[in-house]
Amino acid sequence: MYKQNGFTLIELLTSVSILMLLITIGMPALADFTVKLRVDREISELHKMIAFTKNTAINSNTNITICPLNNANICTTDWHLTISIFTDHNKNKEFEPSLDEAILRVKAPINEGDKLQYGSNRTALVFGPTGHLVIWGGNATFKYCPKDHEDKNRGIIVSRAGRAYQTTDLRNDGLDRNRSGTLIICD
Image (cartoon, rainbow, N blue to C red; front, top):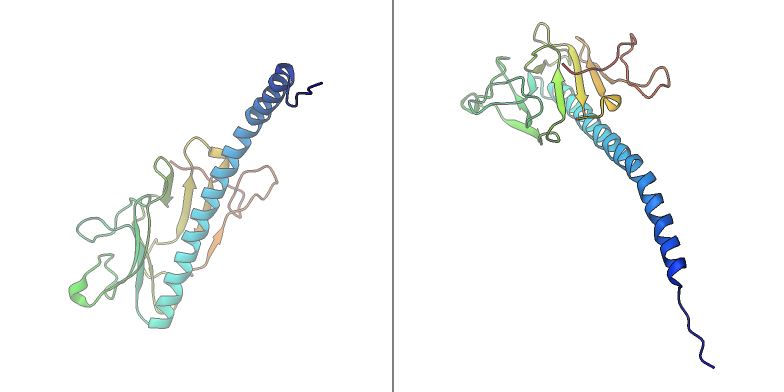
């Protein structure tokens, strides 16, 4: 007598149906989790860059600027592109190697389709030797908004004194707000 091992067609179809159901339920949750991780990584990296800029200004006793540079080495409002940190001796928000200014660090562009804004058309943060912002009106809020996921928006608030803090979910509703309770929304 010969005994066969394996699955029947009914068992196989049932197993595949259950697997497809689990994948269908799990995929949206995985996509949301992936977006949250991406936003958290970008906010964390930007926060570290701001801290690096401030600390370098203090330790080197000079002005240090963080901004997106265009092809002419002038700061722009294109925060979603490459962001550079450089010495800026004359505080003019322009990288000038001829004046012994140097690029200290560079951050890669954010995910295509996502938005990163700093205030209302602010082009740069310039930290002075005291660790304070030295350009009038430099304080504002960085807003990171992932495409098609407004509930995952996050931000970093930078004060005139040069302090930076990340926004949080103050009301436990899954939405980040600044300390005064305002939602983080990109224009």
